[in-house]
Image (cartoon, rainbow, N blue to C red; front, side, top):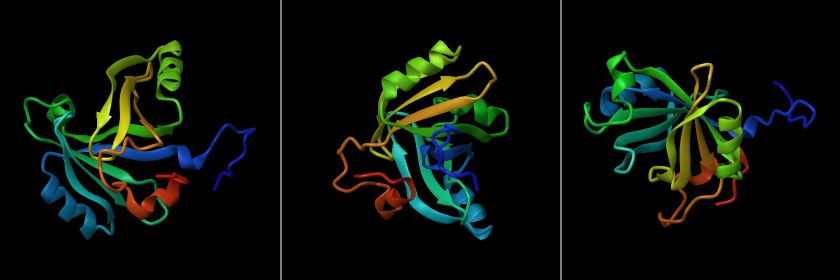
Length: 163
């Protein structure tokens, strides 16, 4: 494992998840759990993003967010799904969404979804497409507070978050 070394500029707690687009949440949850994945956050609907999301974890690996469209034709993941679904994005935690988004843009990335509320995890999110074709989701560490409890529950300890 690479240590949390400020000289390396790497902090393993900054990676929140890998986003994986699926056509059907229920069938996908069954298939992934059969492979040994555990459900960290059960499927929940994000009416703003027009998707259903669930957070899964294989022991010792980065969490995987399954993302399924609510409507296959009217969803931000419709194009990805039309290409067969699969690995879609990486999500990084941020303390300053605006600043980190500006840094991505300064590096040549294009904002594909402006900052908005991400209902499933109760945090602010934004998406950018990098020049190398990687979609990066930025998500604030601090939750907004629209849910009575943090949707990440006890899993917040994985990333060193304070709810």
